[in-house]
Structures are given as C-alpha cells and as structure tokens.
Length: 136
Image (cartoon, rainbow, N blue to C red; front, side):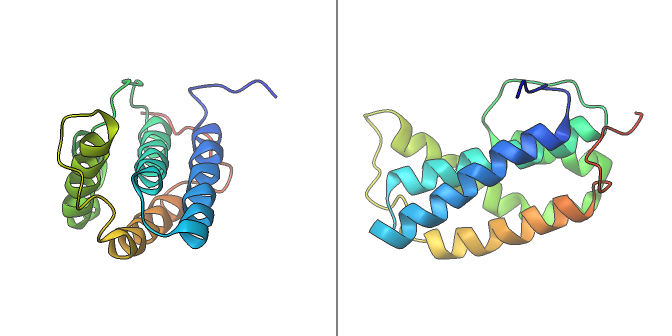
C-alpha cells in the first residue's frame, strides 16, 4: 500500500500502530523511554491527521504543544489537552537525545496514557467516518 501524507486515514493508521506498540511494550516491560517515545509519536500522528483533515499544510514538527495550538484554532475544546501535550513532548525530548535528565521519563505513563486515550477518542469523533479531508 502506498500512503499519502494528505490522507488523514493514513496518519491515523500509523498512529494506531504506534499506540498498540506502546501498550504492548508497557504491558511486557512497564514504563520506559521507548514506551514514552511510542506514545508521543502516536499522539503526534493523530494530531497531524486531524489537522490535515481540516486543510492544514503538513509541517514536519514533533512538538505536540505546537500541534495542539493549531488544533485549538479549529476547535477550542482541544485546550484541556495542553498539559498532556507539553508533558509528553518534554519527556520525549528528554529521552530522545543523551544529555538530559530522563530519570522521571515514564514515571507518570499510566496517567499520560489515559489522557492520550481521551485525546484520541476526541480526535476520532471529530473526523468524518471516511477520514477524508474536509475543505478548508
């Protein structure tokens, strides 16, 4: 299958795969930097899928807070997820490159995962069933 970066359904496909992988790894080994990275990448793709469905031109960024700010412009009901996006982005960067303190990375994973689940449910409920892009 050839994917298309302008198709929200393809973003959601990759997002769901990473979320399943995060859940499986957490179930097998508990919280870890890899689990946090998978969760961050999943939420990044869900947000990008939502944004693309609303006509947003793809920006190759990894900061969930910035992506959420774009989503809030379409729907201010995203605003309560700002703490999740800031914390997950912070933990993602702390574990991504050597040099940061990552002793607390993943310590609140179960809390982050619950919030992420709420955000994913909100995103999926906000997109037409076909996942096709709306006209801006």
